[in-house]
Length: 182
Image 1 (cartoon, rainbow, N blue to C red):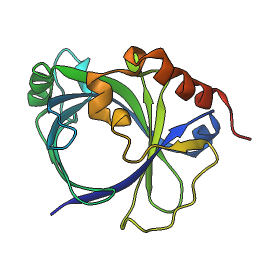
Image 2 (cartoon, rainbow, N blue to C red; image 1 turned 180 degrees about the horizontal axis):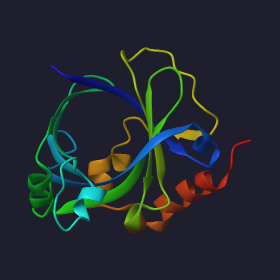
Image 3 (cartoon, one colour; image 1 turned 120 degrees about the vertical axis):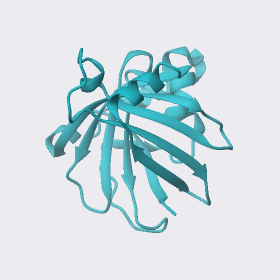
Image 4 (cartoon, one colour; image 1 turned 90 degrees about the vertical axis):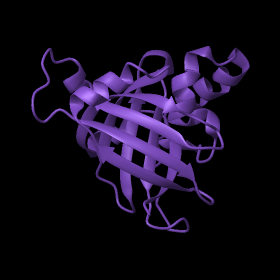
């Protein structure tokens, strides 16, 4: 059984950019999304989505996530044909776009998502861990831990983008993001 254990953080500033190992443009949509139940997501590399004909090497994935305990979730992810991924995205009622960056950082598998469209200017870093009590050095540009905060899940941001949050919820987040760590 696949188990995903991750911690998530809001990011301020640009200091993380010197740690980038790779990047990928992604579009993802949700066929099923529930705060307490299963989530079924389709994700496609936007590079493949913009091609008139799908070349080999285009990527798409179908992912099922189920609740577990603490910060862990059961996760099953499968590569699917790019054309199927694009077709499934067409059936998704809620979607989001982002650029994902892989980072060279110790202590786990770090990625950082720069959200676009209605979820800009959110930048969220995630670190995948081997166990939930694993120590990890948190970089100073990770300004607030959001692990377990449902409003910041990708599924929630797809159905209720940040630009649609009430001002009294958005403003404190924008203030946090405006303070560049030293």
